[in-house]
Length: 141
Image (tube, rainbow, N blue to C red; front, side, top):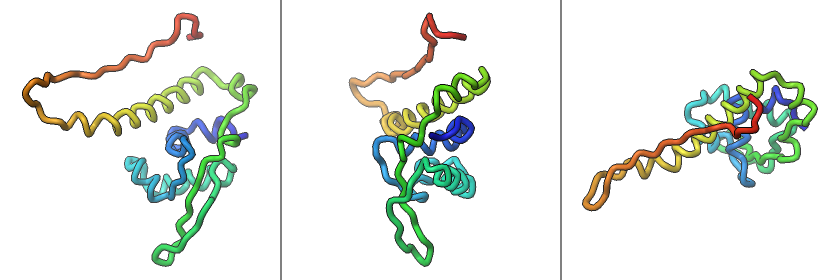
């Protein structure tokens, strides 16, 4: 089981989210999906997740003299224990939620942007898609 400090870092959380759905990715494929993350930072965060056992190497191959590794997410290692969650500060919870929302918005943008590029046409009206995230009435503040 990984620690909250390891998994709730905004970049590492996005890396873990990229692997969800039984995906196997190389660092170059991951870099293409997380284009806003500098390559050196991405490699450093992937290495930390591998060292912690959250990502596992499932294949290796030589590419122009370098070793390219393919990784998968070890879901059982990619969670935080309830005791650790209960010890987190309100700020830690807020940051974890904001990192989750950032990943969600990235996913939505990836899906919606190609459709947003559609030009106006006959019989089509411009639409604006908005979203609002509201806590449940019984959720703690």
